[in-house]
Length: 589
Image (cartoon, rainbow, N blue to C red; front, side):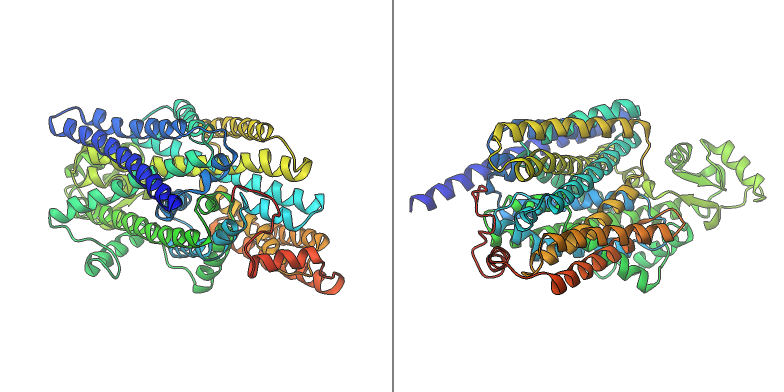
């Protein structure tokens, strides 16, 4: 009875702190809305929310500082499933953000969207519960207990650190791009500001800081995209969504977007391979698995997966509705108007390169008229659909301005995008540092390594990767889409074979090495044979090929040349039918 009472007290205390955080964020954004209503300068109103959000998330992570191993690497194993799933939705949305902001590519966004959703489902049904059942801090931590020799352990830890670092750079770039695009901040300043926030989130509190900051980021994200849709609905605008929204408006929006060549249908085979490759990569990606290890037990990890899938679907629907609504509004206010009679918001966006009028960037009516005359559009003739082109970034971030909903909602929507990138960067940065500071030191050097040494090396790695991210983001030298695709491909090609072999009792260390090498070699060969620069579809296909080839190579080697050992049988038995004590040590379970 005492344990039950303590559990209720802990949950009540946690809910009280979360309620305080919600009230704090809501009050701050409410004050920004009040500034907007009383006539404060629009630029000031739009700036306050993004900067407040970054500072608030950084402060939240810093306040959760801890020297406890269980809290630093697993948030004390005490996160309620609903909150863990909410945090995971923020991380997955951060992964998807680069693709939502740039819809162009060889295929439509369908394969990417379905792949990420399937990956979330696989985490909730398989990899997440297994990690929590065993008490491992990460997938590489668990697999290193299965394969004992240095070579396979080193390979999996290096790939875990590399993929996490790559995703951290992508999240960093997403947050910096959004801060620069919405606020007009200089890129070097934005890179430093975001980097400092990432360190404050992930450094002092580890996974505990990352988890609760990601929960707050998810709340800001959902509010930032939901409130403009609610405001439009109250004004009588239809919600353009398939199945659950206005079908006529959705069809019109799809037609407009296809006319702008932002997305186009792809062959079914390409969509399927993209979906499978991304799903396998996400299901084994270290940062995406962090929320699952914070839950109380395997059953809670499954419930967290259900919550994550729900909130990821909700975020995808809101972003889709935002893009579609913006496309319809741009089409309605621009097509059929003369070049010199467009809304000021269109000229402003065109001056920043987000909209083109008659194939040119213009900053006012005179330039728009000149550009259309050069395109042989008769004077006073209305603009046609083909005379307008829009970048996807504007369709995502420009809805409040296009619909004249106020600068406060513009700032809130910007805050949601920045928060998602910031949460992803912090989670990935911690996963990378933990692979170096915990998995490598604990598994490769000595299983009796001092806790203080592990934490010190983890935090040192945090600083190093953040410095690299700051430099690359300040120089705008990386493409977040390519980084995310490469990380998911590497994760699928290396970890899918290892997970499959770990559950095959005959597989031993040599077979794990063969699986890793076969997966990597196949992925590399697939990319090299295609001379074009890799896009997300090619990377997903390469990751899928690597996963299948590595699994087959390692499985054939194990079947032909290896025998099951008592240790390997015991590991598999613990995973499938035991209580999960596969690590044979206390990992904060």
